[in-house]
Image 1 (cartoon, rainbow, N blue to C red):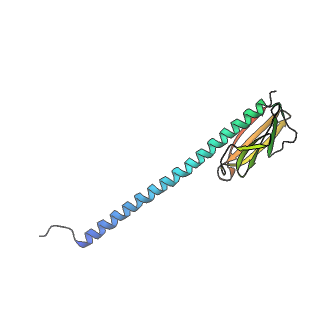
Image 2: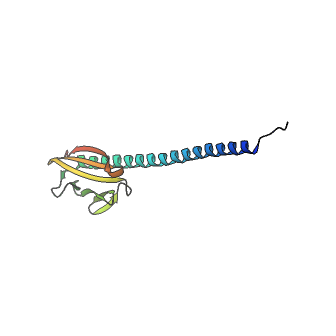
Image 3: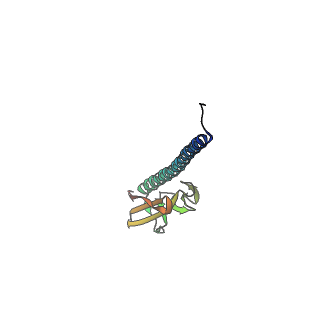
Amino acid sequence: MKKGFTLIELLIASSLGVAVLSAALLSGMSLIRSYSAIERALEASSSARISLFRITTDARNALEIKTASGADKLILDMGGKEVSYDLNLEKVRRSVDGTASYLTEQGRVKSLKFSYLSPKLVRISIGFGEKALTLFTSEAYVRN
């Protein structure tokens, strides 16, 4: 009697090994894709929170909300300088006396809306994620 495996046994074992390795590879690739998506969502969330904090802080420290402000743009009188916020190319733009800088990277923020509840009270809503499904909202009262 000879010891060893037949050709059929080796083919079956090889096929099973390939199937197990393929499943492991696909599972690993799916995990990497999920991690990347979660990382992008966390970065967008962090950018939106930081922007919301900055806008809220400026609004609270402003002398007044300018009457030219609208649903898409907030203009603040900071006592000697004018600060405005709006959304440009899916980035939150902060302008100080006409000089613009961006608080977020492109594609991070999908919507930025302002609601004026009184002459000194503004509600700020920032939407991010796919189709702006997630919103952060804050209200700021102009104290000065």
